[in-house]
Image (tube, rainbow, N blue to C red; front, side, top):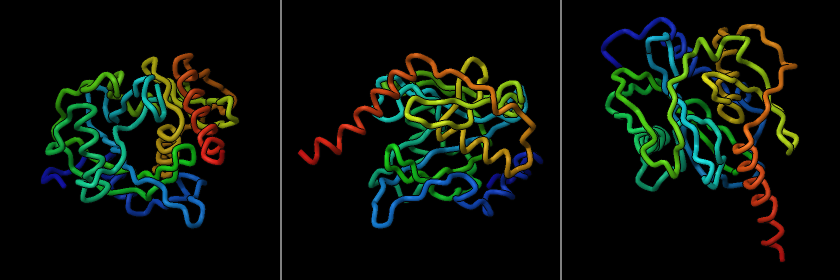
Length: 233
């Protein structure tokens, strides 16, 4: 933790993190006897010109998993990683160029299962004590990097839901011409609710998925549904 006191809004996040339970963030639970792959993401908050901000990135449309989606920095755990925090910081540095030494880790949220990819993802919450310029380090993996104002995410005019052809319906944010949905939007929405920051919004508002994102997502879905059939042949 930093020697300097946290801003009051960040202190409220730090106070809440140890008490958050998995069922408050997701209803999905790994099947008994399963062995999902370990992964971690970095939920990095900082203080910007527009007030509190969170670091997000847009995944390249050619990525194998979650192509074109806006997400927290993160990825699969490597053998060299000592824990989820090490994974989250390493992946964030590789994807956005941030300096891990400038991040104070506040804590880890419960590991959350992603049924579509069979990952068990640990969200690591951090305070960006010493921000640096960030950018898409590898354009084949990261299309863009964004510092999104929390006030914009909380604005009811920027909140809605998405409906995917697979049947998935979930929370979404449309900010700075960027659509945040899926796992990332779900974690942010539920975290804001836990913190008491959520403002009343219209759940009837449906945001269309961008064409490239939808196309990549459907390719990804087709690959995943085809794989088990191929394995049984």
